[in-house]
Amino acid sequence: MANKDYYKILGVSKSATDDEIKKAFRTLAHKHHPDKQGGDEKKFKEANEAYQVLSDKTKRQQYDQFGSEFVNQPGAGGAGAAGGGFNGQGFEFNFGNMEDLGDLFGGFGDMFGFGGGNRGAHGRAGGRVSRGNDVAVDAELTLEEAATGITRTFNLNKLSSCETCGGSGAAHGSNTHDCKHCGGKGQIRTVQNTILGAMQSVAQCPDCRGAGKKPEKECATCHGTGAHKRAEELTINIPAGIDDGQSIRVSGRGEAAVHGGTQGDLYIRVHVKRHKFLERDGETIYSHIHISFPTAALGGEARTHTLGGEVTIKIPEGIESGESIRLREKGIAYRGGRGDHIVRVTVDTPKKVSKTARKLLEQLRDEMEG
Image 1 (cartoon, rainbow, N blue to C red):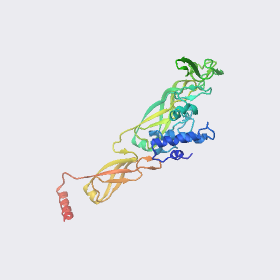
Image 2: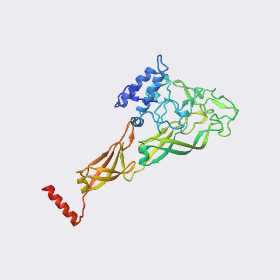
Image 3: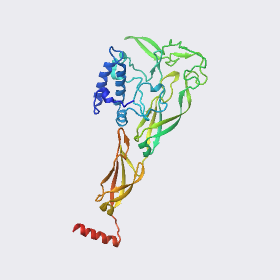
């Protein structure tokens, strides 16, 4: 699948402000909403996907750097990965639920079906099913690993879908039935008479926890919840170009929700260790070398550290202290290219010289100064 141009989808420029992006999305969402006559569900989802990325400062920065299409995470599907999105080699954003649209449309959210309430997914019976907790882990990388990308394995002990019952909560051979407490709706509606009139409230059913279904006989492993705590090993591709302090979201790989709810997400917080010889600024790498005065005057060669190891570089004649040498496309990989490596040069002036060296320097001075 080709990279998606989110700016083109919303009809805005790459320098568009947050307000311009929001206004463009609101127009498209009203135009293409599938519940409206002449609506286009595909275009509506595309617009929502683009808005979810471009309206978030961090996601927009990652999109501008990496693009919308990376290599998908192995096994990163599941309940939380439904719907298209900002997928990538280490990045995957899920926009299937569209809960944020309620805030965008304000009071019209309920009319268009965006609703409010807690973050979750609609159950088959129309109730609100709980969402699993997000899980956060840390990954410490070397600068070289961050520059080239790396595969990391994480051993997690988290609430996961029950392997015995497949997450249904029912014992083998046992069927499920509508919850008697809520009539299979997953919600309990109550009406209270107040001085302002009858007020209706809706709450999640405490018996089935919003699932609308209950097993005839509960699974002995998870006791009918469909989830239990166990060790799980996840292998994640961390993309080339990741920077210190950035986080990777892997959709649907957090904790499972009880009673078949939506699975949470896994967040990987990246920490890049300080390099002994190299510094990074965006996509540019910097190193520092010292050369002698004769090498600066006559030119020559010097050794410097790079992301690929120590290499020999050419020193042009007449270089001065404070000048730099650019190694093109030897920096950090980014969307559509690679940064440069800048070698900063310091010319060392000797504090003590031998008699022979002094004589040669005096001859050089006399010749140069005439």
